[in-house]
Amino acid sequence: MWTPTLPLQHPSSPRWAEMVCGQFDRFLLDHAACERKASALAMSLVCKYSHYVALIEPMVSLAREELEHFAQVYRLIRKRNIPFVVQDEKDPYVRSMLGHIRTGREERFLDQLVLSALIEARGYERFQLLSEHLSDPELQTFYQDLARREVGHYRIFIQIAERYFPSAAVEEALARISRLEQQALDAAPVQPILHGGTPI
Image (cartoon, rainbow, N blue to C red):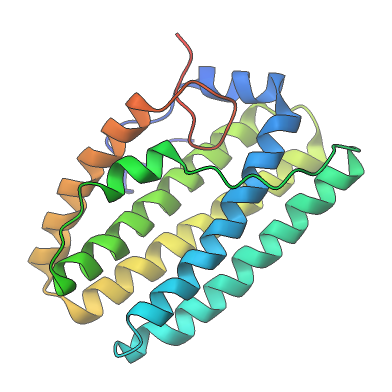
């Protein structure tokens, strides 16, 4: 279900979800890697920006939750007898956006918060789309629940941004980075992964 209230430029194509359903084992390994990286990112923000005290507790809670999501996906991997391989490749989608954020300390902080929010928003949109294409009721429920949590994560990052920056600055960053997000997704390699491009 597309949610236009989230600041994403365009919805993902159902073809992406169809591709993932056809290679779901590979998707699960990538999904586990994404949850692990999301936990690490939350803690890295605590380390880099600890003088923003309002950031610390939400990011620590987020890191714990993302790590629990990693554990849940890992259990699915084990249940399906998929050989667990730690995937540590750089994500082209994320790397593309990181290459365009501003370099000043305050500007970079705002851009990182907004970029993280948009990644969570896209996670919501894709998990929801995937849940609508999966035939297994247990997996449908799992990804619907994850989708709802991703919306909550999006809000956490935006609330922190609004705590420390004027509304106009947050809105400008959302508009600018949402364009970068769509460009990064459009340019992403076509693969059955969370941030993969869409097959033709």
